[in-house]
Length: 142
Figure 1 (cartoon, rainbow, N blue to C red):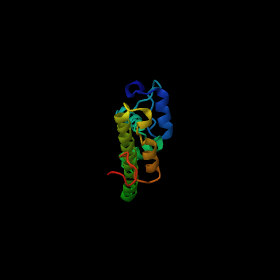
Figure 2: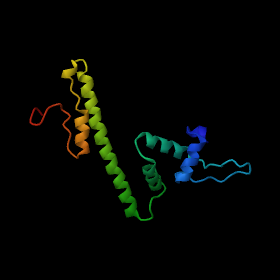
Figure 3: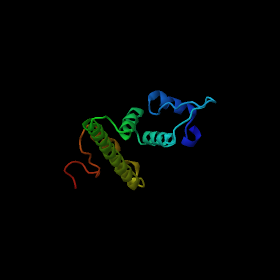
Figure 4: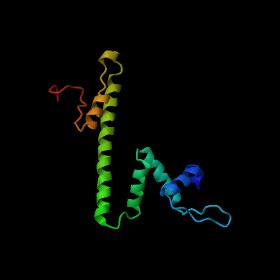
């Protein structure tokens, strides 16, 4: 199971301890008998981590996928919170993307003439400000 999911056995046991996977019953031989959907769940966990989700956030997503809280409003609140978080991450990644494009476009110029507002752009997003990715200062250009 671990090899099929692309992880080692200790990762599976860790996910079980964290409650991300249900502890499977054991066969007479002592080996674990995992459910058919366990591979897909483990792959989802690993992909979510690659996208920047913490295991605590993955746990919430799995909880929502499994039906979430019994109260629909609680499920909606959790899903809305995750959606807002994703939108914020997309904005940050978009700012970084544009900044890197700008750097690439200017990399043939002498070092002093290159423009890369990456730190400024992401710093502005972190402070809740709209980043100016145009390379122009305030009041210059459009």
